[in-house]
Amino acid sequence: MTEKDLPSDPGARRVIGRLLGIVIIGAAAIAVVVALLQWEIRPQTDDASVRANFVGIAPEVNGHIEEILVHDNQKVEAGDLLFLIDPRPYEIALERARATLALTHKEVDGLRDSAASAVAGVSKAEADLNASAADVTRKEMDPVVADADITRLEAQYLQADDHLKRIEPLLSQQFVTADSVEQARTQRAAALAALDEARAKKRAAAAGLVSTRAEHVATEAALLKARSERSSAEDAIGEFEGINARVAAAEAAVHSAELDLSYCRVTAPFPGRVVNMDISNGAYARAGTQVFTLVDNRSWYVVANFRETQLRRIVSGAPAELYLQSQPGKRYRGTVVGLGWAVAPENGKSENGLPSVDRSLDWIRLAARFPVRIKVENPDDSFRLGASAVATVRGSFRSVGP
View 1 (cartoon, rainbow, N blue to C red):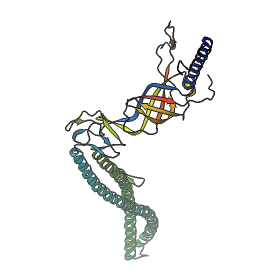
View 2: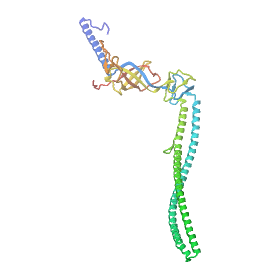
View 3: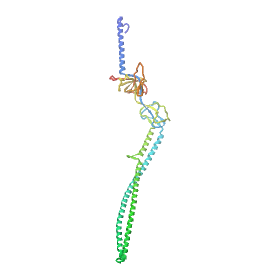
């Protein structure tokens, strides 16, 4: 519209001016309302940074680094060899463990042979004990038999003595011959000798019984010793529930040595990038001490710090738009996976179990910020750990209680 198009009437010009003012004010009000709605339903913050999971790569064994096969900021895949530790001490340890295992097998075989001999010794001792028990039983019958013989021979002796005493007085009267008397005397002497012999046999039988019983006791002691030797031999083998403890321990030592040797090859546990490498060949690596860091590039996150007044519109699972400061013209998609529920307070401490809060006379009370974790759906090589970002979340209209 040009000056020629404007009405020449001053009153008309005033009306048009007022209409334009109203339109401008209305447009400004609409812009303010739209901005407030956008602020309410699309919380945004530039206090955000790129995050990723990372681990410190540390060896499981001590040793000099023989070769490093990666360089700083290199991208690696899972299983890629990162560096080698001098394997020679662990190869020697493995050979020693294998030799010990072979010797242990030989020792166990020898102990098993000894145990078999001990078992045979127990069987022989048990047989000897049974035979000794039979001898004791037999020897116990000898005194009984000897007593019976003594009783019989005593009767014979008494009979022969009584016969001699009867016929000796008749010799002077010549009622019997001298030969008869002499024969009676001989019979009495023979009966007495037989009785003495039977008594001697009884004494010998008693002595033999004592000796046999002593031998039986010794045989019992030999059996106990054989059983003890068998138990010791079986314990020395180390068998328990079908497993030989000696062999199992030696095999475990071999497996441990093999594992230590395998640890000399340090590989990437997941795909990522090598960072913070400041080490070279020949350095001494210690078990559990970090050599460098590996950043996991499979999953990227943006941690955005939103004001607590904005959290009521942010829910888990909400979509988000992300921009990197290094790539301001490229939009990335994200999803809210978690809202922070705790931050360290700026003021206040605990004394004697009670909170102590410093007095504040600030005229303006700043809202606290809480971290919101957003998973990046379409990351690319532009993402770097710690990079600055801008995050916008599509908020929710659902009612949120205080």
